[in-house]
Image (cartoon, rainbow, N blue to C red; front, side, top):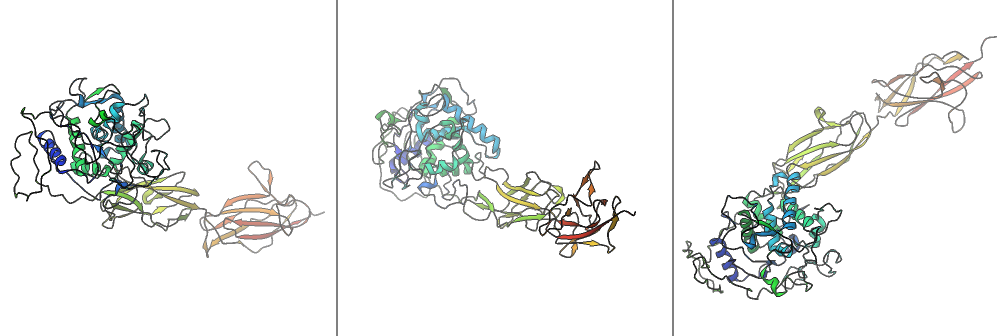
Length: 571
């Protein structure tokens, strides 16, 4: 028989009697043996970490939740298959679409963040506590709830105060936010973490596939490993920061780990209060009875067959130095408080550590080094975080040694600096991404630009006059380009025969070059040698006798004009 506590709790509003009964049920059934971790500072964040979460610092805004507990008899003994046939306790049955969404979310997250080790049973436990598995699986063929599941207005009256962030787009309330959907996301959290779990092109918090995947990614944030009890506890507390919430979720998590089975959509067991018409989403805009109301049902019997007394509040007594005998399995007891362990810092964000403009000339090293900063959930620098730097895009730029990808661990100051980045010969923009290894945190992206080599001066070498008879060729024309006084190697140079106008243009008469097919051309492009020198192709004398002009222009804008004289043939 299930030990039912049929109402939804507000954070900080739990009575001593209900808390004691919940702990007793945990102790008497299958509560996980690892200690509970209540880390105020640990909550998923795409940017900076916070301290003690406020109402809007949790996925659900710390909104009310169902406190029904599973039966004291487990679906199956530990170690047996979790894919049991359609038999067993009704409470262990999960509606088909809901179960499929949880398992699909687990597979999707495992494909991008295997280190998180997200179990679908944790999603099922949270879904049970938040919405009774989408009101017993009342969803359509696409997994969308048949009617919206909405929490109460978070107006600060018994709940957190969260003013409207979505103009009522998700929750229909343009004054205050409400938790929305089967996983009860508040709109501001959904705006950041919303997912398209069923590939229909929408991110809908009322769709179980979208909501389950969003919950999975939210729980995995900050490089958590949910196979570790401490990380799992922190993840659950980030969803709704309440010790009672954590205990309830963990109880269902352990229950589902011991066995479950699929039931048809719409036939799942509803939380107790749903029979009274106060279940969320019925249009009343409320989550259920107030914290002062009594449970709607009480345990029918204890495992020994003797009635279990209804818990009643008692004046606090002086704690005993040692735990007392817990008594029989049906007797509520007050546990000895467990000292809260010191929270373990976890990676919460990776950000640019002040890297400036990334620009280099082709073939040169970038003067600026790429640097990132890893921060913990307490907002402090975090050491020993492995960061991978990747050169991406249409470029031949690379790190020292010609590597496109390198990994560097952060130091005690929380920073990791990439090796020297060297530009190739290909000009243009490309990107470098910095990613924290084994996390789902977004990459830090940097834009780098490679510019062409330049020369700020060019001059002809040699002083002899350049004269040729029409129909013959000129002597070789040579020149040298420099940049800041040094030889400018591999710089692009354009040679053009120009008119003698105030604004010169390409001349269509007089001396010319030839292309590969032997056709006359009067503009020719080439590059300087490594020492900055160049020798022009053969120039053919043509046209009427007279003086013509040849202009050389470098990448960078340096120019020189050279005179060519064509003489008439001898009589």
